[in-house]
Amino acid sequence: MRLVTIDRCQPGQIVGKQIYNVNGSVLLTKGSKLTERVIKRLKKLNVSTFYIEDELSEGIEILDIIPEELRIEAEITITEGFKTIAELHHNKANLQSMMKSGRAIRSFQKVFRDILDCLIDHYQALSLLATTKVYENHIFTHSLNVSIYSCQLGLENGLPLKQIEEIGLGAMLHDLGKMYVPQEILTKPGELTREEYELVQKHCELGFETLRKIHEFPLTAAHCAFQHHERMDGKGYPRGLKEHEIHKYAKIIGVCDVFDAVTSPRAYRPAYLPHQGIEILSAGAGTQFDANQVKAFKECIAIYPQGMTVKLDDGRAGIVTMYNYKAAGRPEIRIIRDEENQSIKPYEMDLAAEENMNIEIIEAAPLL
Image (cartoon, rainbow, N blue to C red):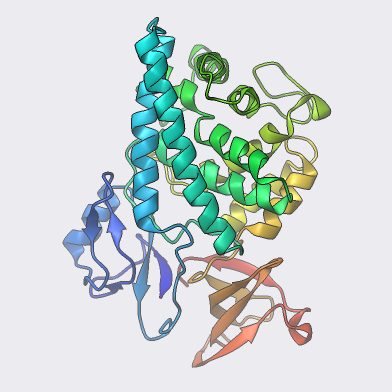
């Protein structure tokens, strides 16, 4: 199985992993044959990458660390919970709405604990590319992804499980305040006006003010909503906090928030690839983001996920077959082209092996 872009896929290729619609139902089943009509439909639905089966990638299996059933349950929980909790902001903070919000928080806690169990059971470099889904409301999918990444980063930090649960819960609800921002502003393809940008910035305070009213919600987790756009150099918002003034939870979520934002598709741009997202974080390490958290994130994320096509500095090219934990930038590769870019009989190479340590990946793409 290997990853391809929608712009370079061909009719007749076989779908390697199921593609889901916004409701979690199967849109395109594994084993389906692509047609011109199907490709046009996927483009219209803003699907940018997906997996295919072919001879070159035979035997490469993509691991779903978070089962699709759990992802669907989590997104439903987030979607319904956001709407329930958001009522508190609209002058409806009566006893009934408080009780409903408390039940929603308990639902968030349950689904996050299930996610945490999956990550603990399969503790390795994480990739969320394994699930191909049509996106409709990015707030809910983004909130789930940031929670998963934050949980992984919390584990990488060696934090106690209680703290990881608080981070995960804070991450799930870090963008709650966007429920009060007009959807047309959040999805605007062009540059925001000054007034629109100021309105978007208010989501941090609006989310915090709502969450801190809920007794079941830890105040430290509420600060994740308040501070996740603060930056180390003081140029973030809403309060312009610097370095040690920023809560550690917010530093963790700030890294995960940006990574998922740039590696997810939008109506006005395709998704960046994981290694490109890491480059963006690395460029801001120490100024925008906590350098230690960026370093830890690079250790626990699959920079070159399984199925990705990569080119080496000696000209050879191959497909990533397995990522190496603690050496995420040096995966195992199936070489399919030689130094002259000629097709060859495939063979396996482990870039983390001592004899291959001087070989570097210089380019990566979903398809050569």
